[in-house]
Length: 119
Image (cartoon, rainbow, N blue to C red; front, side, top):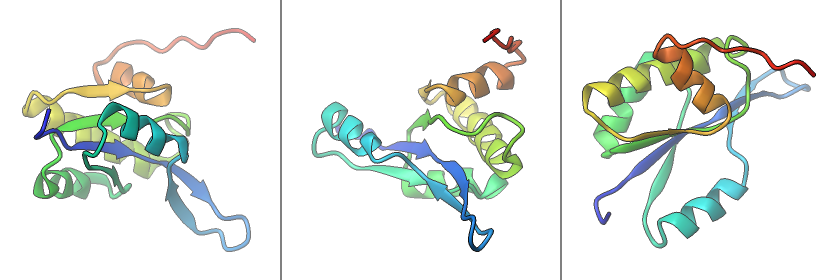
């Protein structure tokens, strides 16, 4: 476990005043990681599409968490980022955990079906 460096993906938020897109992560993720990996580093991965896996590789990420937020198809850059990261992780046999949207992205990536639940 000493060599684990978890990278986590982020949702996309649009600033209503400027229209600028920003990557974001809920603050409770810090509590989760600090409880799971006390004293160990983890890092947020920016939505940079196909460039993100090279960044993750260069930084030494060897485990991946796909976080929640944003429906698939709502944020094309995030979709592209997570797809590229999943290809990269699968080619290296890295562990991946999907939370909420992240689990849906895993299902989508491996050609599974997503079935909407009736409200």
